[in-house]
Amino acid sequence: MLEIEHQTKSVSVEEQRPNTLKSAISKKKISQQIILIFNDWYFTFAKEQNIGSPRVLSPLKLEAKKIFLRTLEELSPSLPKIGILTPVFIFSFFRDKGFSIPFHLFRSLSGLTRHKYFQILKRIAGIFPNYATRDRKHIILKGIANVKSSFHLDSQFIENSGKIMQKLWSILSNTTDSVVVSTVSVLALLPSLNNSINPTIICKKMGVSHSAVIYQVKRIVKAFNISGYTTLNKSRELLCVEVLEKVVNIPI
Image (cartoon, rainbow, N blue to C red):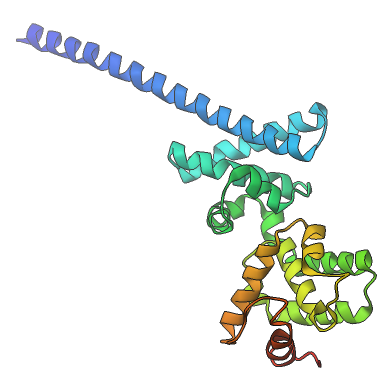
């Protein structure tokens, strides 16, 4: 009886070994795939933005990989989701380290929508405390000051921009810093908008699409139940009165 039990157990162990081996091989292949995905995105961003020499990139890569693998352990995403999460992680990592990668470049490389980006960012924001807790308003005001300097605008532009940002923050804060700077700047210039300083030029300066600003303007109009808006140019007077004068309290 004991011999039969022993044989049964031996067979059971032998049957388990191939499955265990297959599982180990499968895990190894997945790990290799994950590292390949990580390496591909890391060097894609580094190359596109010309971030630095191998001497600079190597220690950064080791740090990024360590944080990335720890993040995967915490989130346990599926392999397809890792493919989506990785570019957001790399983009956030470089920005956390002070490298200014334009958001339009991220979107161009990743193919992700702004909405999807923010969805993923919320999941990993705690990993990058410097990026998550930075003073966004201060950064945006610096961007607005840069617009003022580039286009030789007066102090009234800065004052109006500050008022617009503060009043519309709850609407504008759910997008990138560059889009906020562009939207606020365009609105601040509406009363004196002319052909030499148009929205497209400001958007190009900030590295964002004109449509991104239009989308934010539409959100503002919708938030305050303003009817009659058609386009930025055709509805300039409407925006001046209904948004700048009535909502932001800027004399027109």
